[in-house]
Image (cartoon, rainbow, N blue to C red; front, side):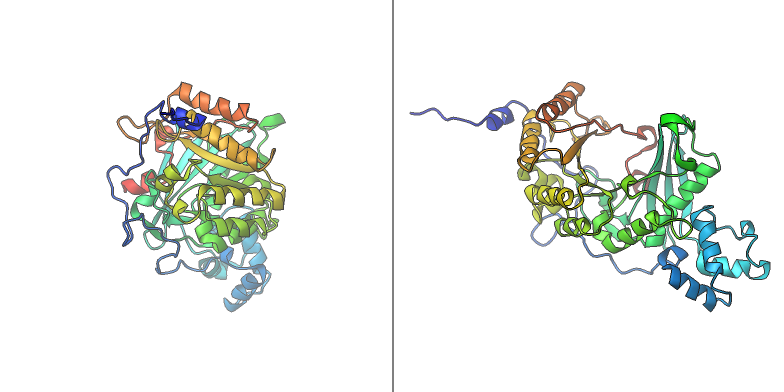
Length: 410
């Protein structure tokens, strides 16, 4: 009887245990076929008040005129908001005192109420919990690094992608955030920075220079699936890159949009002609595991998502990031590093960079961090295969840095 021959991948698969994904402390919502429920459409809820950041420059002028003031006051308001990061009428002394309160109330209504703030001991990371007008909770995380200040923003209250490891997904999708609610997270972060509330080392000059002590980098890796709220996210990005005072005057190259793999939206993003950084949260190269780990993989398989990511590089010339959370005995097997490298190299060289992310350790959970030597071997294999790979510096473990943890605890 001929002996069974096994491929190198199959031989490696038998060498280590395979932990299967499962929820802990909550149950995934499922459809009538028993599959994890995916929510792409936002539930209908009361809309937030219309804000200056929801309007074009022409619409702002028209709105100001409706409030009984000349159109040029719109630019003054925009300057206060996008340049001085304030919605406080008392600080807007160039506006007529008699109408200042009415104008600000009509154009800059409150959108986010800070309900909780946590900071690391040295203050270089701050996590904000915000309450929206309808009581929904969202989070953002502000982080100082040498030479840059990064803000992780939310794009939805809750999330409909139903990933079993994600704190945000436990309650499903509450609603999409408005353009202004997304922008307000940045404005409020900039105000905190200007007030000296972000610790760490704010030295200027040389490689540690930070652009005017404001947010320089945005990552759409907070609560929600950004590409499921496509229009509002892209409207927010356009405001981020619009020159001050009509926008925040940021560089598109400092903005990263992440997705779990909504392929049609990835293809659409490639045609936007805005050179943002694109990141695909892959977390497994094989469909057998990714179907369980990332439920949207039931719609668009791993190879389809990787193809769409490669298309983004071809269309834009911008190198793509692959995000990969390393989870002990679940997706950190050496053969998966080899398979990932094989799939990425099959599509060419120089188009992609892999960011393995050590998962925050949770004793006794199936969702815990890889052992250091396993993590190092995973990275070594990717680099050895010619895939540029950098282990992500994780921030905020001491303050429940993963988005969704504070909101879930409320």
